[in-house]
Image (cartoon, rainbow, N blue to C red; front, side, top):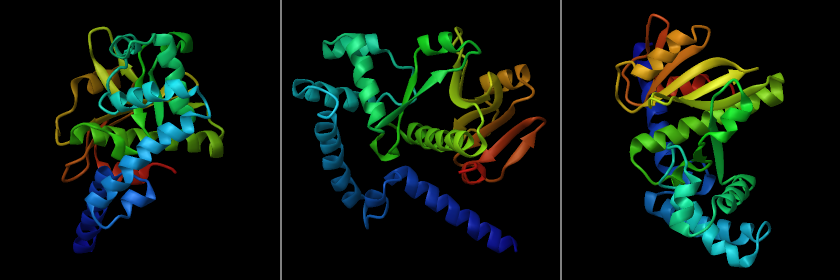
Length: 250
């Protein structure tokens, strides 16, 4: 039985590694080699932006939107400053907001806003952007892992909407002093789960622990990519990534 569990865990870990490297789209995910996956993704991204954006925008904007999308690939997981990107691209933040709405409508990216019990205040603060296709993310393994968890949590929230009829939402927390928790789930303005993503760190993240104490009714999970065994520290749960992701509904 123990050998079977170890084998099953190894297979799940290998599947997670493959998903992090290739993304979830069938063609690159099922390609025989990583090189074949990359050859597929390059024209896919170019064509997706060029062809589909024309349905939403004027032809002269396509190159700017493509460059904007390319810049977003290296800004995953960080609060997004449209003003800063606007200076780089020589366009207004209002125009970039329109471009971001287009990329969302095309299911290229999705936006995670900071949590606040006042919805209007949350929307006004800087969002974070993630890609539906983790393979498009340009960054280290930690950023790609965070993007993968973000897509899984988004799917979980959508399942809660569609199947359970819950008023669930996906956010993140960032305070003025820089304390941050990667993701929080909420329902009817109440936090239900705190999720911190780590590649290897088995020590409880300070901000995550702090907010867990402030919101004792919310389940606190630190999801670690390279963790030998899941365990609990009081009310805090240190979770193997494959076990946590497999445990999410939908």
